Image (cartoon, rainbow, N blue to C red; front, side, top):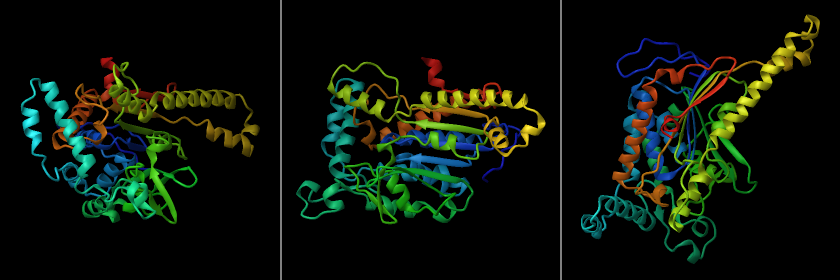
Length: 393
């Protein structure tokens, strides 16, 4: 429940005990087909007995958020798996796929070709339960509106969300849910939050309406696009929301800001996406640490004031700003495989999906293998981050 601290519990096999945080947040970035990595991370959290109290997502992260929050606790992992197997199913098998892959001489080429075929299939055929191509295509459409401004129809996604998600449960307050989108008319970023309104399928579809592939989604007379157009992570929103509270955040990213210099134009395209959609977590945490130092300085000044001055309403307001809070950010970043190219975010094949899922599960298990990573930071530090892949580097 909101505002209720998770108490230290005796660890069961495969489970970990959490220190007392006010909020346990799961923050999910956008990244299309790579989002199965987030599902794997959630499975690892679930098996460890960690139950987030706040879910925040953008784009595919918003869709994963909806499935988790809109399912009974015991069924969340199974519902996630059903969602991903639905949207990654093969609509019509291409006859040449098997023969092409089997005749390539190297396993690297085989996987690369297999993923490329999956990406091309998604572009030309769409994905069941997710999106389907428009006919005629938008540049030939005689009509205005969605038909002329997007390549795909996302009506199948609404059907999938309504089938898999209990929106009464999602809005019950069991978890706080926040998803980000961009107002097409004003250009302003908006968060749809269950603390402020009831959320339905349209709010999650809006968060994932990446143009020009998908159409803008109308909500209350305004039209919205994918939140990743402006910001691809809800981390700042979670950490800056008032009142500030002690927070353990699992941030799950699908794009890595770090990478090597590209060797050709295809690698340039892939690297551009990595940089464009990565979350700038370091910049956010640096800002949080600077704010923490400022609050510490304010507290030292407050201690020097006479008691009479401390009763002044303005001084009391400053005292509230100076109050310490603990922030632990556990960062998990999908590591691109060597055979994945610029189309990795729309390679909706079952094999790729299962590999992404397993990567997320492996990474969170490795992270939780050292329970000290979940410890509350000391008041002197205030903000800490952990990233198992940073240790590898």
